[in-house]
Amino acid sequence: MSRTPFVAGNWKMHKTVAEAEEFITALLPLAGAVDDVQIGVCVPFTAIQAVVDSTRGSSIEVYAQNVHEAEKGAYTGEISLAMLDELEVHGVVVGHSERRQYFNETDAALRAKVPAILAAGLTPILCCGESDAQREGNETEAVLRTQVVEGLADVADEDLAKVTIAYEPIWAIGTGKVATPEQAQETCKYVRSLVAERSQEAAEAIRIQYGGSVKPGNAAELLSLPDVDGALVGGAALEADSFAGIIEGARA
Ligand code: PEP
Image (tube, rainbow, N blue to C red; front, side):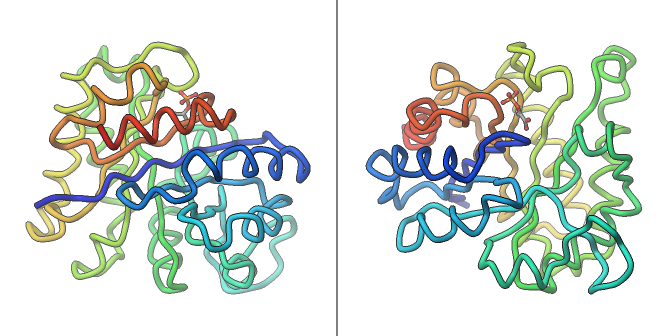
């Protein structure tokens, strides 16, 4: 089955509204009309409205970087799906290793968030990935099994393919130490096999991104791998030129 590549840039805690608008102004002529790659930017809450407005009518989709699973309530500082939906975001990236590590986002919370995002009609990007020590200790598959199985546990089989999974080895995030093509392919294939345990049809359709030090210079090779359907990009997604270079790599 041919799957449309999906390249998303995760801005993390970068870009004021003015900086976000400047980025989109630079990106639109480079990638705003690309129709063979799905493109997303994962934007801080404060800049979402401005980026939704400035990308309207283009092929660039806007994602939030977190959401609370509850409909509403006494959760100071949190943002609900209704609030994001009102801003017309396309989806939400959840389970990033930084949120797991610094903000205690647990597999149990993700088990609630992923189906809640789908129920709101939005697209979840569910991140998973092992640490250096876990890879060294041959625990990669066990770690990914827990994260993926738990994160998808309350998603109906017929909805599994609506989720995007981002495989992001923690040792490759922001380090410049990219996974080898063999590691990326083997591990993304393993993630797909976990989905196949639930539904073969969903496993063939679901997009699995690789993330971790993707740059314009390595994107084409990584994104040509059979089980890598795109990229989740941090540092190299902060400049329009390099983000556009990665999008071009997905088209190669
Ligand atoms: C990320 O934060 O999701 C990421 C992959 O970062 P970088 O591309 O900078 O490694």
